[in-house]
Amino acid sequence: MSLGLIGGTGLDTLSGLRVTASHAVDTPYGQPSMAIEEGVLAGRKVFFLHRHGGGGRPIPPHRVNYRANLWALHELGVKRILAANAVGAIASSMTAGKLVIPHQLIDYTWGREHSFDDGSSGVLQHVDFTHPYDAGLREEVLCAARAAEVPYVDAAVLGVVQGPRLETAAEVTRFSGDGCDLLGMTGMPEASLARELGLPYAAICMVVNAAAGLGDASISMDAIRETLRGETLLFGALLRAFLEASA
Image (cartoon, rainbow, N blue to C red; front, side):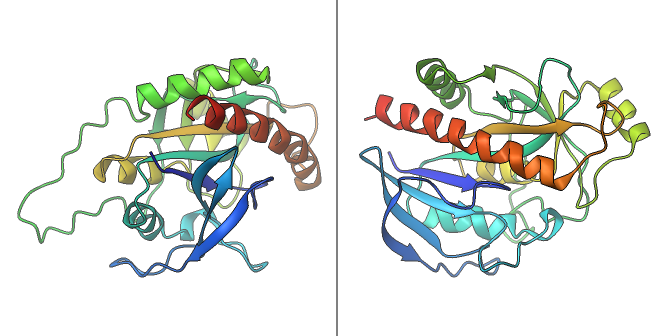
């Protein structure tokens, strides 16, 4: 079953991926973030797409063409999707350097194309989104995390904010009151578009900092990049364990 991997900040490439083809896919929704790499990792065929694109000009989270990205992966025969997200932590248990496998989300984004439904089909796409992440795929990821012995948290509510700016301390207080454990900028509409296409989808969040007002120091992009360097190694170990288990 072909796996699609969507990389985020800090995960520009997949270490160990032997690329066998590159696919520039035209979609009804425009161009994906970049050509999709097809390759072999841990003995399994995978398709890799970096949502922020390549070429040294990263696409900000509110400008990502999520519809084109998901459509292109679907057109290439991808059957399941794992997505990586760099996030800030609200919950004190979710410290920088940990991987978190969220089980729920709250969408605060606006102005993004949130559906493939343009009204032309005559059938409204009221997809069931009660549980935004696929339960079976999440369980496989959790088993892989245990097998790889990486530090992880097995559940969290991810708040998806618009970006690209970071949040104010007052906003973080509000999000905490809403029940969010993490804050990121790219989890939606990616997850709901995958659901519309019938693609099981799960996320692996890389915690890079405490959310605004919750840490002892100001948020530094240099510190975030340094944390991400270590977490990409953890992500790679988890991913290999996942692929080996699915072989």
